[in-house]
Amino acid sequence: MAAAGPTLRLRPAGKVWRAGLVLLLTAGFLGGTTVGDDHWWPFSPWRMFSTSTSPNAAVASTLIEVRRADAPAEWVPAPLTPGTVGLNRAEIEGRLDLIRADPTVLGTLAASHKRLQPTEPEWVGIRVVIRRYLLKDGALTGEVRDETVAQWAAS
Image 1: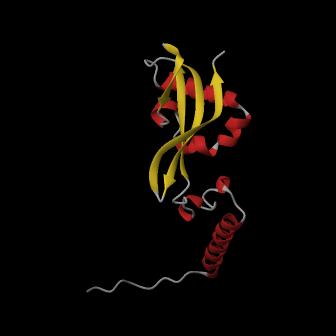
Image 2: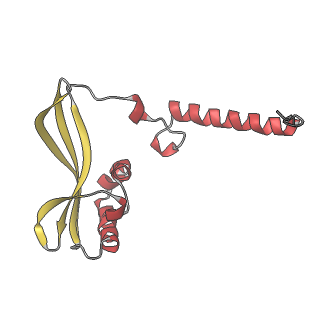
Image 3: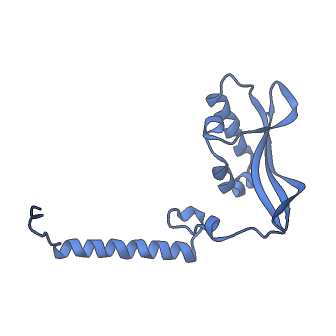
């Protein structure tokens, strides 16, 4: 085997900035874990990995239902995907407080859908629904409860 060459040592300035970076990242992660919220990402607490649902509670799933121009009286489920509305379900869930406070922001989903899916019927109404699947001893009971969080209609 050939020798690897001379060993290079870090200069004091290199050690200082690396130590400072480690301290800064440590402070960010500790602060995010103790007092942060989801908006602190990537320093936010990852609650999705640190909590669980009771085996006798409900599992919640957020979805959207739409009214289409070709059938304006009927609500139908619509996919929450980047290809359909430009966002995924988690991004909608992260903005539920904003959507509750101002349901008109749902109009942007209709506009995005029209731009992304120009051959599909236009959406003239959107509602955000939280569907809760009830559990008993960790198994589905078959009972489902829907809560409409917000609703928007085209003018």
